[in-house]
Image 1 (tube, rainbow, N blue to C red):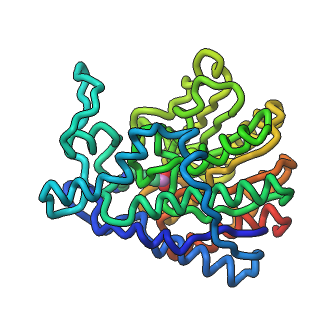
Image 2 (image 1 turned 60 degrees about the horizontal axis):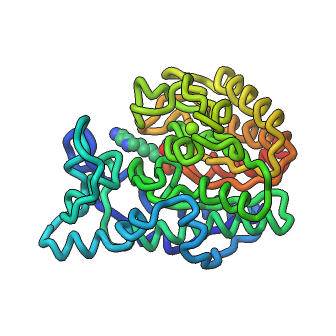
Length: 343
Ligand code: OKP
Ligand code: MG
Ligand code: ZN
């Protein structure tokens, strides 16, 4: 399987993550991508390609113009305002307040964010753009006939809404990939999100549509981020009713249980008869992950890859989470190797 990777991911190198009232070293750090790339090389998974430049057009199919302008300019505006630290949101639209984009930089940062866990500094926009280009290049490989491709995206994307960043995400790479398939004439596309966290952005982007089926397995949002979306009664709305499926699980869920949800997800995908599949691949379901609570083992990722392959679909894997850097390479590449038949 071919891997798409951009060294520009390293342009995102924030020093802070607001966590428990402290500014800690971010969980979503550059060594994550480098470790996965090293494993891809080590295992000779296949050719490693740099992304092509697709411009903003395929990104604008998912994200709003004002949000993209904000992402592009916010760091310069922040510095010009005289602020001395990294961008961390401080104020949001509270219940009863107005959804109106203000001029002030603090106001705009709050307007376009869903949490304070995701700092921004110089280079974040360039890295996020490169990450989307990585996904779109993998999409093109598959549209041109590859059975599957691995988009080694960093930063991740599945928490980003049409006009919100947060959860370490800025541009929703999985949604941009699914929309690219649609715009190239693929009639139905499925997005399967196996990251530990609910794919809230992907769900929201396609919530009113029946042409993109969205499914996420994740930690119960009653207990974990994103807290306010991802419950099993969210089934889609209007045209989209019946085209979103959430499968939440409690702490300590092992693969023997999680894989039952995977089976349900795969059966729904088969019934939907999509022409392509996008897998939002997080390996923060791992037993040693520092911020998650499932109990998958490294060997389980081989089984996961095998099960996804059985769907028989053209497949793009977009990298999402996974924060045990020591294991992230083995776990992510195991999914690809399982897909290719390794047991
Ligand atoms: C991104 B992805 C932990 C803070 C958690 C949100 C988690 C974002 C996960 N103290 N911040 O889905 O892996
Ligand atoms: Mg998920
Ligand atoms: Zn995650």
